[in-house]
Length: 440
Image (cartoon, rainbow, N blue to C red; front, side, top):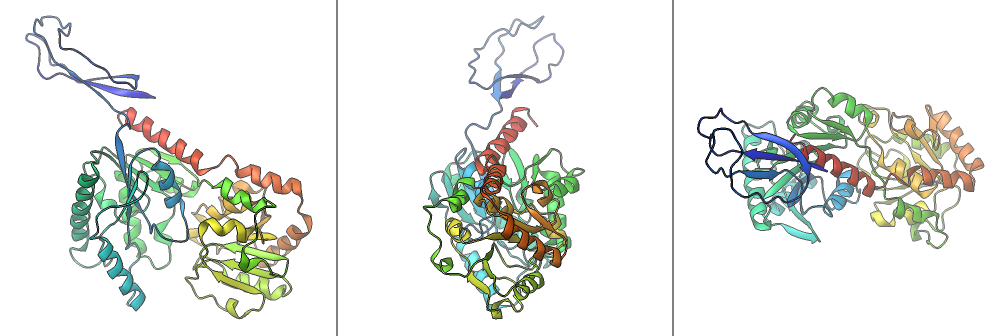
């Protein structure tokens, strides 16, 4: 990597013109320069100068992400786990992106998160610490934004002192704490955008989009996980890169192993099993799932994950199994029971701008995949079956059940084998190194 060397002259040599700072590129290293004549005409004085190498060495990361303990592991978690192997990291859990409802559940959650924000940094493992950011979620109230900024800055500066973080990169995966960008004495700001947050259900879309756009403008470097997000941000970002999701290919590849036992909750299900894992949220086409289950009552529909929307008639259908959320590392054991994996999304703005992580995880298991059409899905069109109507979805399921073979399974796994989270983190970190090294 090339690094910027900035030569700073502390004085103007007698009889000379003013000397501007000079930048040259040299290999990253430690340079020891002794005082002496600078070789400037008319100068007989010794001039001290310093060389500053801009590198990522000795930097730490303040990483603004979502709920660390969430069962649904997102790109936020996967990238943090890999980046903390490259630099010490403080993972800042950032509640409050969604305006709370006047429910006992939301009120308990607010109290729990505010209480957690008073705690000092907690070591998770190795180079990774965790804190919760104090956030008042009622953004429309006067002075709330300023209070959040003051409280957040105080908490994080205190945590940085405690952990001995001096040279810092701030790394945002969510937009709502973006007002802190540049307020922590950091040397560099990254916005790693993995979703169109403003299109999420329950959001104040106008406010979240404003925060997202502002952070995109302020960041030194922006990554976006889908081609549509890149297109939306290209006129806002100073420096922008396409960075699609990775996959834990080794973990999900276990589903193809004869030695891996099927999860206990799926071991005695009637086949064929049509499987899904993820959140059953507002972006899931519940009516499509109902249609499929009713059209094929002799198939089992195994839908794994938390339900955060009205599930309609699904719980009452005898061939639908809803085991709830399962530990992330146990998902290959559940996926082993699948005969076909499905992505039954609604066609809305959130989905069209997304890069579905589960698509890569499904392919890593080797299982056939039937999915609705999205721009990101079409990148894998050779390896999945794409449906545009519910009738077509059903036909593609029947075809997938009748036409799978070992060669197809191997090709699906090979399609995502190079797309690991380790490879993605390496690429992203190199781009950060290059940007910092070039002085941008």
